[in-house]
Image 1 (cartoon, helix red, strand yellow):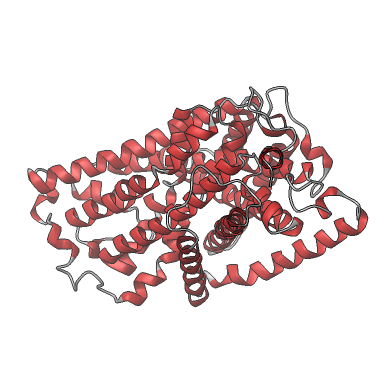
Image 2 (cartoon, helix red, strand yellow; image 1 turned 120 degrees about the vertical axis):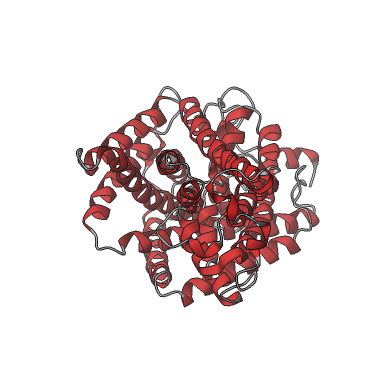
Length: 483
């Protein structure tokens, strides 16, 4: 491959390095915002609320589950970073799937990731409305809160990508402050011995009650779905590539912070909480942070945590609106979605795609409100399997990309994954274990039943599109750069 060919392949048509991002987007997300989007993507309601159920099942061994999952997430993010530095585009893994796996896989990935965020947005905006009832005691209708939150976040996403970045910055700041504050308080209890929880506080709580694996390794494996759900959305930073001011610097820096984020916010927080409060005190449906505050004699703990999980839910819904509009536009630009999704506002935000997704989230709020009791668990399970699909695609594309680099067909990325391709293979194996565990869990199994149905819908719809437009670019080239 000649230098000219390499350069032509490396830079997609219409993507410059000036003020505009790929396909007309504006590069207005700065390093500060990208860093917080990356941090906030790894901290959500899965930690603040879901960890209670996971602790009751696995005990202290949950710490190990988060550490192992965190290692896999790090290699997934490094694989994504390697692809982003090869070619930073707004379509991210959907675009890479189109290039390295074929048109159908780009189509399937884009629509699946769009569905993941719509489903996640449905659950999170409903959850946010429920959290508000803590202060209003149902004096204000839940559906009204859901409507207000959806409209506000929708407007913020349409005004400018910079406003979206600012909202994510402050949402993430609230979550980070809460976790760091909890860790510092626990450290003070363990060292100085203040508060009502000091009598039982000791690092020995991590192994004194029936050992580190109190319910066996099997129960620890069964918590992997909960653990993985907590990490979903960490890949969102890849979608910002087309709107980052300086992606070559900001994205690698954000990705390289993954290890310490997981070490501090997950492993560190769980070590401190379970050292202060014996793990057997935690139960499903109760936030471990609320319980910890109560045991410490801090009566305002419940209100603090309720505010934090409210911001976490709004952050997730905000991210959902951001990513769904961009995914729909990427699909439309490649002939794999309706052309009207390509329309941008004057500020460079995808108008029709964001509006369509926000409307579906409102319909979903109503469906979730009238659904039976276990609907939320089922939706979470489906969100987990659809979110993991993006991780699988990232890893497989990175393996295929490395193979092309070795053959001299593509330029090497300046940001390479350590230990690849073996670390990518091991990460795929980890995801396979999570899927097997979901099959064993009766509540999570429903998502595995939904996956083949969704695959059938994608396959049939793709064939229909191909038949209607057999000469279309989406069906006759592997990716944008493969002209």
